[in-house]
Length: 419
Image 1 (spheres, rainbow, N blue to C red):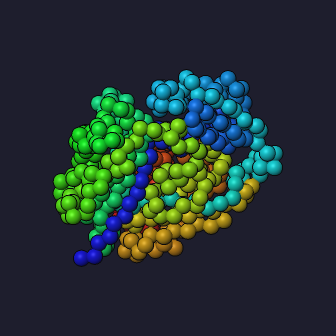
Image 2: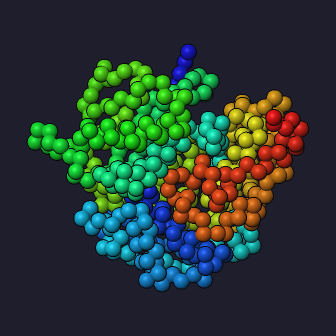
Image 3: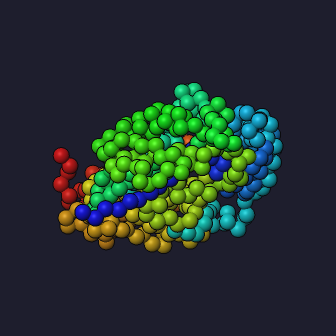
């Protein structure tokens, strides 16, 4: 039987790009808390002992340099960067704010209910997981989410905030997940887990095994124990493929041999540079627009949330087993220029992609104002989205993850109610 592999990655809350995303969204939340009609386009750069915040904001909120400085430092501290010796810490970094008001040319169209920018946005859902997310990105998110939990609780005291995960799933030819094939985890760490090997200090195999036993295996067991077809095997740096059991889940942990220098000191971070991590891990298309730091009049963000909401309700209603939705907009114009649906031939009997487009037009409000009202987006809910994925977490504030349109959609197509 033909099989194929598909891989997705996620990054931790302490990854430099995610640090930038969280600072931008912390400023957005601050603005929306004071003024729900704030217009925000906030970008952040982080590097060694430095945070630079810039962008366009029109808001009644206090955005004096002292307030922006406090918001940035609170976010950095909450992420876990508190040790000045690693090159980036909440109390010692320099924070520079360069925020100014939004262009009145944009405001003319947005004030009248138009989109805050042009572009195309995509949403996706499939029935591979309980949250209707693709399995590889779902597992990758859970690994970094649990990485943060174990770090903050002290159960894994040697790890630091910066980390990346990667999950490869083996699929059957019909698209059914067959097994978890490979896990990659790179995590910053302290010196307590270094061992001498020749003339070099390297990350110890004992620490790698601890990460398998306390983080990787429990995460996989909690989410998809049915796809653990063999033992988890540590692949040491330099190990040949001949030494790996064919049925084993290959675990590459800190495969370079070391990850002492990390965070913004090791790699400059920028808002919006992890758009595939933020969405579906490469499964389905991406329109190219980033989310963090943007208020909901920016359809880059709000229409992507709406497209996910639509796709998820279609799959939850069992009108298709996977669904991709595209919406596109012109700046200053309220209605979408097009609606496109692709279910890859997985629709229920008697249902077509064209019917689903008509269904979407009839049952979803797709102007920027309609999207904001439907999903209640003028609230300070965004900082949490900037870590561990914008989609696939059924949190109370993540209104785009609701499946409250299921019965309406089924009735409209005269599909029998689910048992």
